[in-house]
Length: 121
Image (cartoon, rainbow, N blue to C red; front, side, top):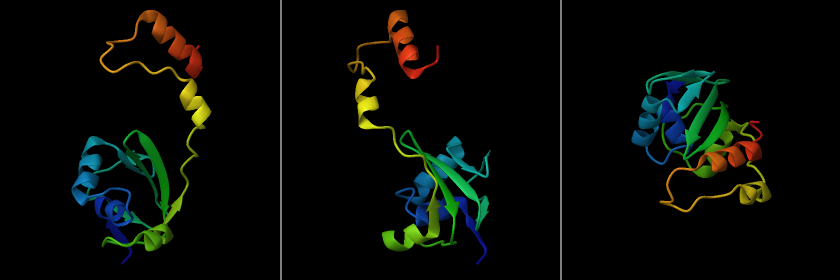
């Protein structure tokens, strides 16, 4: 087997919990193969770069082995080469101010402070 559907492969290597969640992410444009958004039926082959956005975190993996059935975690780790950037340090996340839920939109002053923290200015 040289190719597999991208939704089936991402589900098989445990990037998504269900195949339908993988297909939904493809439809929403959260799955990219070699830099282009793809549909669920797009074939992936060994060496392709797959970028997946799951719950706000982007995972960048390279296809090392083709599988179409769900496999265990140790085998799934052999099927991908993880090229994801490391998560930001907890100190940086703690320094970003968090608004209370239901507090409404940030004010202009709040937005300026957020942009200054993130380095947009």
